[in-house]
Length: 106
Image 1 (cartoon, rainbow, N blue to C red):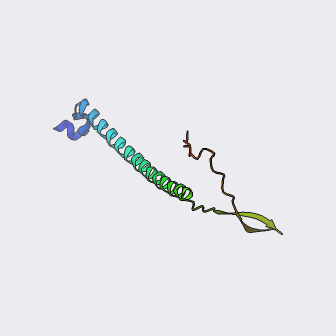
Image 2: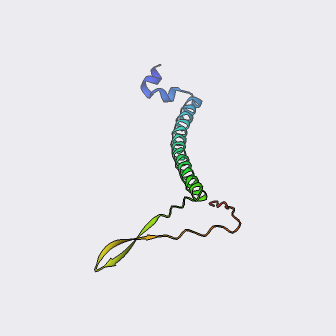
Image 3: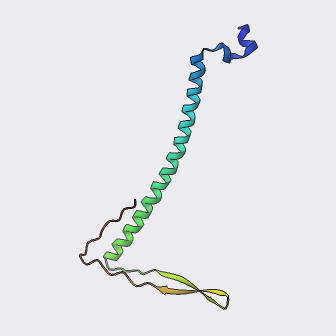
């Protein structure tokens, strides 16, 4: 009792208890890091799910014959000023076999 009051409780504790406290702190930090990573990956998964749904809707509309060609704004300089000029894109030719291939990212 006198020894722990003078030198603090860390010297009075057995070595395995001090080691256990360090392991507990390490486990808590790992839990925090993995929680942060899980939050990041969950938000990424939701974003890609929304993107996939949007692309599926666009593809289904194309297959139904509801071709909507987006207009892209091109810029050209006129006397130092930049003015937008709308340009409609031509629809891409349909595949010869009528099937749609799948593209995967590496």
